[in-house]
Image 1 (tube, one colour):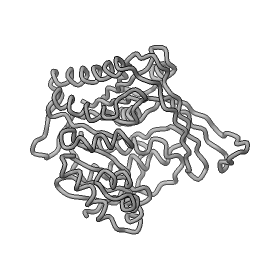
Image 2 (cartoon, helix red, strand yellow):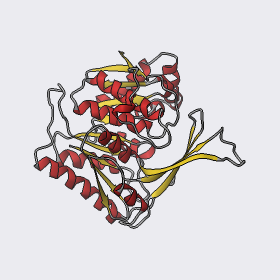
Image 3 (cartoon, one colour):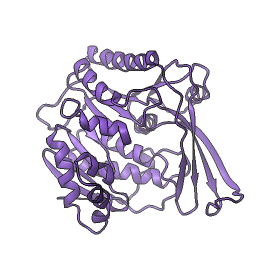
Length: 343
């Protein structure tokens, strides 16, 4: 069982320029694509492309263009569950340049009422409970791998949703489906609220960037911003040390993304760093979501921690090498494997 929640979905519009972006000038577009988006939905689509059955929960009006786009989406294995709300789904625009530079213009999203927040929450819990009653969730207390079940809570929160919603949902999911693994991929205030609720709201996976990791670990602002710079210079130890703080508070795995320096994965069993396969960067849209999908995919196939990190890097790199909003499947993975080493 894999279930994703995208509380702030979008229609993702990607425009590709023939040259560098000219601020204040006329920029002629080379291509324009529009697809269903939002971080959780992106993760779900990558997993579906890779042969997994995924239930994707998201709020959207019944006649929203996003719902129409989902109906014609070619993604066998993906089952969208839309919760009817009043506000229209936002449109996010990504501007990509030939050198791979991507500029994102994200709308805030429609305000959810308290009743709509409750409806989304109930849809998630009903989906998880339904799978639990059918016997498709199980834990692996020995930590030896196996087909784990996952709930992936991903993306920003819409206006009207409580800042600590993800932290609350982690607790509710633990009660509804013991043994379920939970990933949370968010940023800013919702991520800080999740960290403040540790260890009670500890998920099995989080994916902060270097600066976010430093902030979550309680580092001074200057040291937090220096984590990625240090990794670029080959010093990954401070990143691993910061991640261990969160693992000590109950987080199952911390996968810290470090831009050009790759990524670091820390669990209770160890720490590893990885450098991404070299691919020509065309668009970074969906790369982070694809890396989460790669990690989850490897886990449900029984991979160990270094293999999960390698899969995350492979899928993230594959996404960066694809145009526009194109998300990767197995056929897009780079021939060169990510280099993973223990720390």
